[in-house]
Image 1 (cartoon, rainbow, N blue to C red):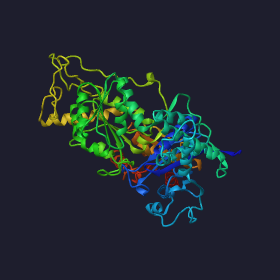
Image 2 (tube, rainbow, N blue to C red):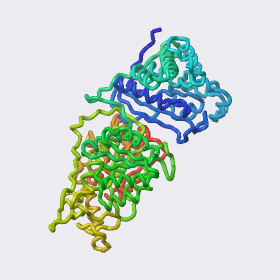
Image 3 (spheres, rainbow, N blue to C red):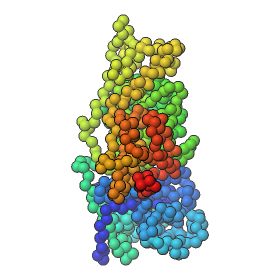
Image 4 (cartoon, rainbow, N blue to C red):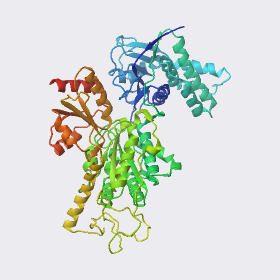
Length: 624
């Protein structure tokens, strides 16, 4: 059967099912196939916080959205063009996000009265005409998978040891094969992955291979799918690429910082969603002089890291918002000791335990002010999953150069999302090698641990055990130059101002804020930070495509702000700041630059949609 092939510029696909249906694996494999094919790609995994919610219920729905195109894209897409729903709950949980005309591939196997009730349906949506505005393809994926596995059991590659229950679990591979056929995806990487994953379990390997191939063949032979789609590769900058998630990019950036600084990389951490993957990855990289300690709690994790910093290592601790609160006293100790320390906060919804698997940007003010006393700390934030690599290097540069803790604010959307990453030439990365104190620096031949570099105001980094560099350590206020314990009011005032001046002085090493204003005629500026970069950029493209002028700027450095930011803000008639909080950056901008800003705030645990931001910006530009 010859089927029509339709060319598309971009597609958004969402795989959704129960948390045990393997939707994250399915989405990840489709993403890998798409990256191999050469499309630009961006993903958004979305999974429940419960380890195992009741099967078939709305709280237990897990999904994975992938957006791919033949041009540069910035987001994981607003609404899916194709929804693959593995049960009634997955269909219902995602239906509100679908436009009329969306293609729905639904596994009919579990649409029993009991499962419909679990999903809070009063009638079967496949029979009551409620889906008539969509292109619905009802397919019994489960039974087709079981049949395919049974046939494989009778062939040379036996899957006979796999029972019906385990065979049915391979339905995600059937769905992957079908969608891979539908969108002309290469299959070699998935076949290689399955072989590596199940190579020591031949029956499971045969079952998964049979399900994947059966899904592909079903698309090829069924009359239900008369059209295939193709999205040609994107014209990306030449180089070697790989698909990378934000947490993996962050881990690689930390490893690169260790290599470029010539220091051992030490991670003291306690597992917490959504930051745990950084700990997992670094624990596997001992060959790169990486040391990891999984501590008994958040406080022990950062305490170990600060001790490693005192000992001359590139020290890191990873956490999320609740853990950052627990680490606040030790961060303050790092400020007083003036030691380099990287604190990576992968933000999630709060307060308290909050929304562990959902994203938010609500830790900015905690990062700025969440310590007792005047304890200024530089704050940086990556803008995309791949940018987590570069931001980790920048955080290390600041910490090592200025002898200070640095807070890096990633978030759940960046951590779990992925995109193509152009692998850099190692020699092109910044040289981060620090200078350690090697001998006395006082006029009398003694060592002054708080004698400062006149340019950076950083104090000497004296590794314990170096002869002649013995000095007092602790959290009590230090005397200027000597580092002795001091309760003198004038000395305290001086030390507070010196630590603040050191952080403020970092701005001198930063590039001026960059503004994307193609026409030069825009009177409205949209300013963002962190993971809002993608939705803001995509929204600005839409606005400009309709003939309107809009300027965009994005902040990596949040403390201190980059040079020229105040002048940029005052240049425009209106400044719009979208944030996944209730206006924390907006508050800082108003206080620092005395300029009004229009804050647009959402705290739904999900990223902004480009469509909604574009509508907002058009209204601001036209006076709506």
